[in-house]
Length: 252
Image (cartoon, rainbow, N blue to C red; front, side, top):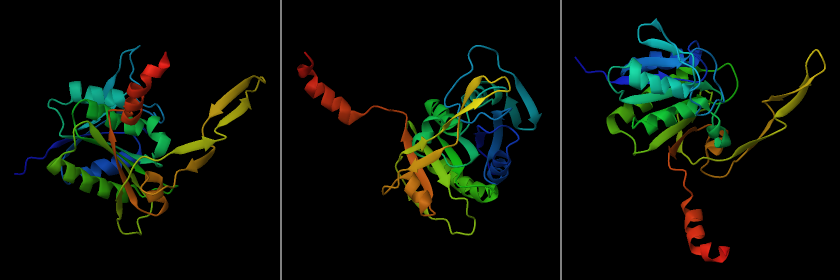
């Protein structure tokens, strides 16, 4: 009997998200997945950890657990308390909607993979670009293929993969290995008033400005290709570091 490796699966959309269910189903063909996911939607929480209250873990069914916390909480608790052994891989997703450019800094989906990488576990985040209806099974099939490849080959140290898949199951799979582009938003802050006339602000939506330069994650999606972007934990700008060291004498 083949020894199936353990894969920890999480997301930022909550335990009931259809993308999580599709991912678990596909991964069961190649591994032993265990889901540890937030009990509710945690989109755009970035890499936040819950430190000012206790966390509750509930088992929903066999190998499926929900946590009243963030995606990073789920990875931390899943690896340290829920699983008896360190998983061979962490997969976060499938997010409905792409995580490209500047979105990576806000994404709970990507941050779960960051947390796994910080713990020394190969990790990747997977998102399905475009608009509903989302073809999660299509994306899950590719994610399982990628998971199998990583289980066999590993990933470079301190590096995770951010995967974005076009929401078009009629196209053949075409992959581009990309760099992180830029995606900024115009008009994303809406001013509203409550029934008592008090002013409030709502952050979300707006008009995206995409970086369509060659080799970017956005450019790959715009041309119907799967984008796989390697992201390193080390955020140091080495070009700026060299500049500062050389020019520091002019500071005084």
